[in-house]
Length: 406
Image 1 (cartoon, rainbow, N blue to C red):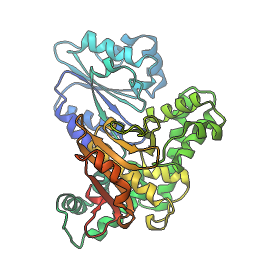
Image 2: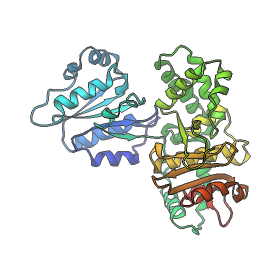
Image 3: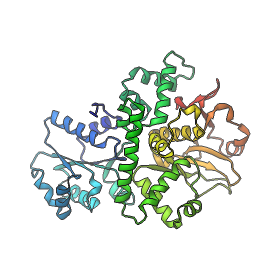
Image 4: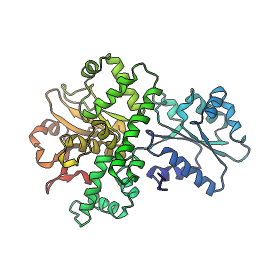
């Protein structure tokens, strides 16, 4: 399928910073559009008549050459002189020593080479000194606004803006927006899926992502039990929004708890899942260890549970809308700022975004607003009085806030 030339939000942020001296790292799962962004940047630099070279590490000859010697890069680009050269390098994680490669050129030629990399692996996750050297730009599957733009529905983008900024806003476009939102919840935000018109073809694209690209990530992790890692990925789709019980997963998969933890880390480092950590501060029985799990794309999650039924007809509809709210919050906050709250006796708030003084924001997600029972949240509200709970519902009552308003 021919890709529409549609700019992602992150593209404009990167374009504004092209002249700064830091190196850029564009991160995200396979198939979210990182290479397309790189090619758009190449076109922009050509338009500005600036020297730019695209290096594709999916080319095994290029990869072998750079693994052999970092300076072999100059077999593919000219040596810089007084004018900086832009180097766009796709799939930097494929290099055997990615961090050392980047550090070398940043240190030796940082003023002469302006390098922009993409990666579908958080190979840098345990090196804060290295990440401090870079500007890191996460690329997620399309958010709802980008989804609407890819669908050529600019009028619905405006409608969504009005819903978010004007609580009492009503218009005839609301139903069209809700129909598009249902599609987004069902098929997710991978660009190729969004641009595919036929629903059966959408499912085929998602199946290809699940069985080809996700499995490639698993094979590249170089672990012994690749089938069990894929089975774990499948199991997690059914546990969306649930606490991750390592012991239960260990028994189900017949793996050690250490292996389960390692496998979860692999899936997270490949941008397939997110683990939300617990918020605990003032109550002794607040949970302090078990994370909650969310998929990073709803379409992929629905592929793994093998259902694309309409949202209203689904038994897992509560999990679906909670996962959507997590995806939306991920666009508004840093991932480590999004927490959940739960006590050992079952009191729970889905999402908490606190600051250092225990002020901030708390969100409880419901499919129907009438499912919310204020009495269940008294302990949290009394303890954290500066974090009032917002109820976000897929089907909101008159006085409740819609998920769309987030």
